[in-house]
Amino acid sequence: MTPNEKYAKEIMSAFQTAKGKGYCFCINPILPYKLVAQTAIGISSKDESRKILIVTPYYDVTNKIKGELIKIDNKEYTNISYLTKLYVNPKYNYNYDCTIVVGVNGEDSIDLELLRKLDSCSKFTLFIFTINSLPNDINLFLTKHSNFLKTTVTPNEARMAYLYSPVEEWRCGVELSETDREEYDKANQYIADCISIFGDLKTIEKCARGDKLLNISASEFRYNFAIENGWNEHLNMNSDYEKSIDEIYNPNTLNEKANTFYTITHKRKEIAINNDNKLIEIGKIVRENYDKKICIVSKSGEMALAIANYLNGEEFAELNIKCGQYHDCIPETYGIDDEGNILIRKSGKDKGKPVILKSQASSTQYERLYNFDIINIMSIKFASNVKLKISFDLIIFTDCLTANIIDFKSRFINSYCNSLPNKVYRLYSTNTIEEKSLNSENIMSNVQIMSHIEEKFIFD
Figure 1 (cartoon, rainbow, N blue to C red):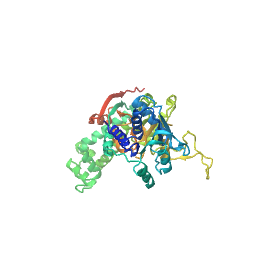
Figure 2: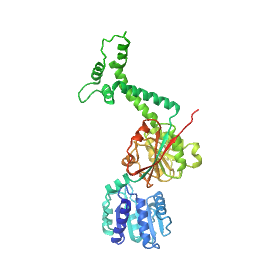
Figure 3: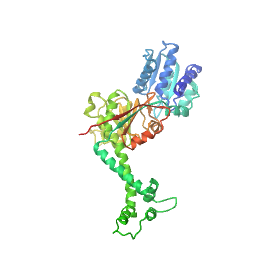
């Protein structure tokens, strides 16, 4: 039994002990809509004629609950009705056997009168809160009219179970273009030559930055290293052998090579990570899963932007997909409402003009549109704001050097994978440091490698 299942079971048991009047806090990372679905099924299993009202903060949460009910029990529950909190009419006399209220607490405030109204809708009421700190008046109300539902599942237990939940991983190899392969091989050769000259990475670092442990400057270390390798200031440049020593071990040459080494190493990595041919592979994965919620994770904002532009292009128009973005390289975009209409300024000197958003505001807008199911794909930068709060059916990592699924879960603690096992795609450039790194990984026991796909491209 998973912590999610255990938590739901214990909540149901405590709810019965409390005679149908209780509240709980949905501990991170247990998903509220999953808890609601499991609880609703538990209540219905006693008597399917029981009329249940489920109140949610937004319509997308309602849809997730409906989808989860079908997923768990493969049927629609006609005894369950739904309302979003904005449509709760304080004057209407709701009449239900049980009311389940989830996430009606906003980030700014909780409406006490809303809770009073919902508590009076039925004999049995379950409040599921998605924040851990409640205002004093709410706490007082709950103390008088409800009961705190205790469970043995700890936040850490739930977190660890989610962090290391089962994973199905597809590994997709993509060849570099001829131009990129040529540049990559040149960089590779330069790095190999440097290793041959310096011997190891530590020596390169000391030649570039000095030996802090021994308090030796970079220039002093290079001079000593040059002397050790046969160089001196009085070499005979008429001698081919001594001239070759000077060409390789002259301290000025060592300085240039050591510092260029880091530039070339970074360039080699970027060629592999930002392989343009990966866009084609991402497109294929999206085509096969166009009706799913997809998160695409890249190292750079530039790559995240290129992916969004590619997926929003004419090539994918027939799929009716829309890709949002969450990073710092988003160009200025129009502000739009939930219906997709461009927002117009209603006052000020720019009255009548469209609202223009910078990258941060655009990221927030895309996040909102994604969570409202107006768009179904998010292209993000791994180093983006950790406040990102989305859920997805599958996740694509555009390289295997920046992050994996555990890195993602550890960083973005408010974002969740809906699928179990988690559906993960990891792209890598073949015959590069990416493939070498991937092949050297220790595969964790919770990860099942589904396939190793190598994409071959033919260039004219």
